[in-house]
Image (cartoon, rainbow, N blue to C red; front, side, top):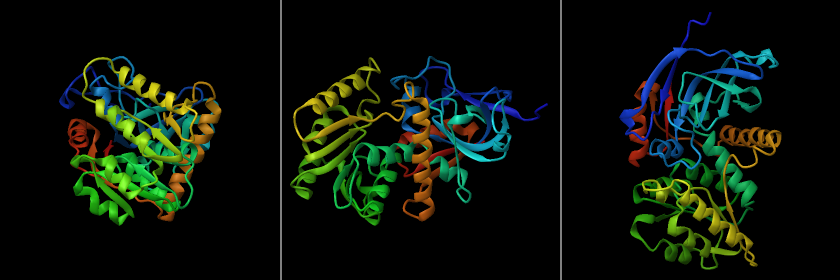
Length: 343
């Protein structure tokens, strides 16, 4: 009999962070094809911030356990799973369910974490690293000597993206508030303060012929400027609508409008391309291919960390029971790096 106790965070509805609930229960048993992971680190991402507002476009019905990704040790394996997997540290992308002390995951969905990488460091690179790598190398397919624009270059995805781009020999212009500019310069990024307005004009002065790719998580009306800043042959990768986080009304409508714009631009007879990136794209139709790419790409990100091509910044480490404080901190916009929850 398992002496451990399950502790999980429940999002009961559209609540302030203090409305999140801590629930205790029995640790579940691994079923066929599953592993039971003892969580060592899980993170607070923009997805959970949207979910607590009821604004994430495909979140489940309330109540549910949030948590987009996690890193932990395999505690037990179910029928049909290699028993030797027990005791190994793994990462998993789950979308929901990660804010718990113990999580059941299909064994085929876990990715081994190399020795020498800590749980919090690995956690900071799961959803952020996969997103950055796939947008940079699978969508934009950047090449050495090119110039790209990264919106929110100091953010979770943006900070990984600029480092991966620099390692690939790509020049980076990054938008961020002024307090992050010194850090960006240290990373070889040319910073632009998005709060002073006229961002497009200033980027155009830095790259008169246009940029080879734009990575835009903001959405809204600014997406038009992102498209117009592209050089011939350039690629726009849209991957969110952060500007509509606090809007009222349908949570799907901002994404639908964004998808429509991107689809139209992509279909135009010109030399530029536009994509909407969704890390889950293709999973429903080709699960094995999705899993293979996830494993390969996260492996590339971990290898980049081990080589020193990228570093991670942990803004804070808080216990799961202080999830309200963690969410407040992540939403404050005052910290750089990942807010990590531990058991």
